[in-house]
Length: 162
Image (cartoon, rainbow, N blue to C red; front, top):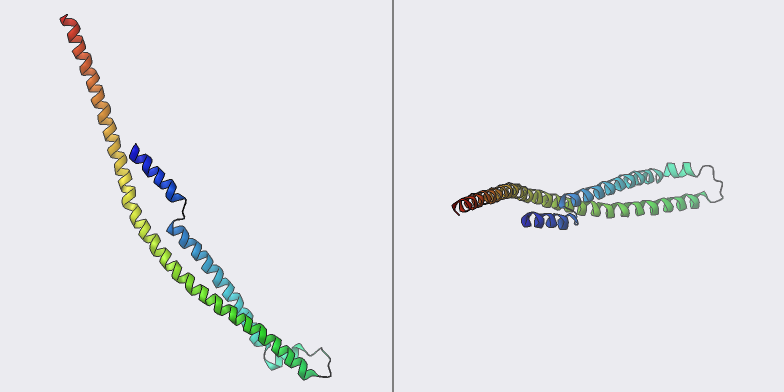
């Protein structure tokens, strides 16, 4: 019983911290989020590259009347270039984060594998302990019953001899 209680207490203490498998799942979700953000930024970078083409800048300003169209085109080009550079910087940051998450995911999966490999013998030990404990209790109850019967038998003999 004491062994079972200690295993139960260890199980609740260990249950408070996330297991390596849960950690790996959390990292995997973060990695998927980063990959989604990367795809959106890549799409935006492609759109900005297209918008930066001279004919597309010209087309975007076609309805705008100005006495200085060259300045408008240059201003639009600078604005698009700044946006593209910002998106590319964000892509680099997300790329670094993705690499770190992939590395952390590999480590967490390895820990989860090792943890699961260690749990199998522990679970087998607990099962074996339960079986052993049952036999021990059954043996103790049997010995107690045998002692009671023997005691009654000896008591009856003693009463008859008086």
